Structures are given as C-alpha cells and as structure tokens.
Image 1 (cartoon, rainbow, N blue to C red):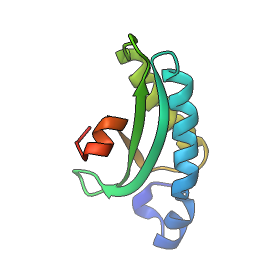
Image 2 (image 1 turned 180 degrees about the vertical axis):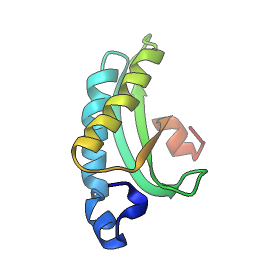
Image 3 (image 1 turned 45 degrees about the vertical axis):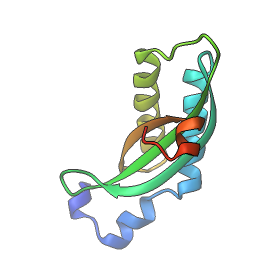
Image 4 (image 1 turned 90 degrees about the vertical axis):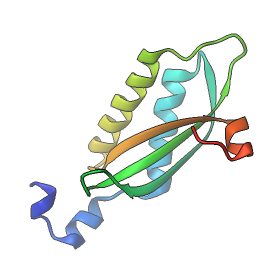
Length: 111
C-alpha cells in the first residue's frame, strides 16, 4: 500500500527506532568499509526530503585506516545495502547517508 494511503498510526508503527536504524547502518558500513576505515559512530535522525516526504539522515563517523582510500563502490554498496536492510525490516523512509571523520565531528565541521 502506498504511503499516501496509510493512516498516520499505521505509518508510524512501521518506522524503526533510531537505535535499530543505527545498528543496521553500522553493520552494513562496517562490512563494506572495514578495509579502509573503522566505523566509530552512527547517528540517525528523521528529516524531510526535498519533496516533503519523511526520510532518514544517517551519519557514519569514520576513523580512516592509514594509507587506505575509501572507494566509490564501497560507499554506493553501503547506501544500497542499508536501504535494502531497512526495507526488509519494514522501514520505508529513504536513507540519506553522510560521512564524517572523527576530526570533523570534534571540530563541528560538515561532512
């Protein structure tokens, strides 16, 4: 059933808790990025996308491995797999992934 046709109560019941979302995101990110970075923290927050739909902002904080480079395929695989795992768990909001280093988070910088 499309989201627009659901009652608010039914839609809200299908949303996962932030802790569940963060756990899924951490597991997927760790599996995909472990050769080039250590996932130190994952935070999640609800937000509204540019079309007014409910979405998820997921920030993955990384500690890069010395001399390693995070490849584009790994970041794309992470996004796709997080979305697949969230959908399988009943979460329909689209995930927007942001990456930051520990230094950026400490300094208050953007990802």
